[in-house]
Length: 109
Image (cartoon, rainbow, N blue to C red; front, side, top):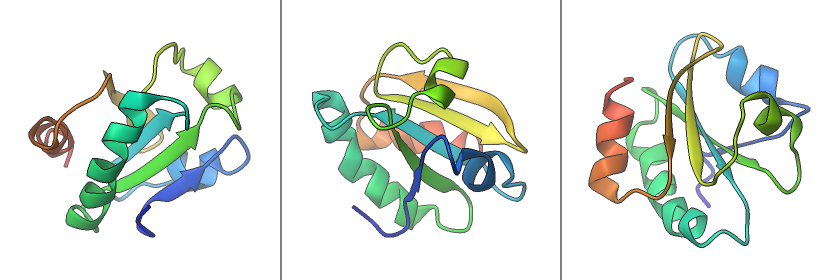
C-alpha cells in the first residue's frame, strides 16, 4: 500500500477527513475479505500518488471500525465517499477500473 494513503478509523476520522479543508478527501470503505475491494486497492495506490496535492485518498476498514460507516449508511463495499470541507459531496459503490476511478476523482478536484 502506498504511504500516500491515509489509514482512518473512528478515532481519527474527524482529524484526517472532516477537518481537511484545502482538498477533497476520498474515503474507501473496505474490508480485507472483499474481492472487489482488493481489486480497487492498487488503483487507489496509484491515485494517491497521481493526485497528491489535489486530493487525499484514505482507507477505512469496516471490520476494524464501524461507527463512521454506520453513520453514513454504508451497506455495500467498496464504497468511496468524497468529503469536501467536512461534508459528503459524492459517493460511488462498487468496483471501478482505472479510467472510471480517475474520472470519478476528477469530478471533485
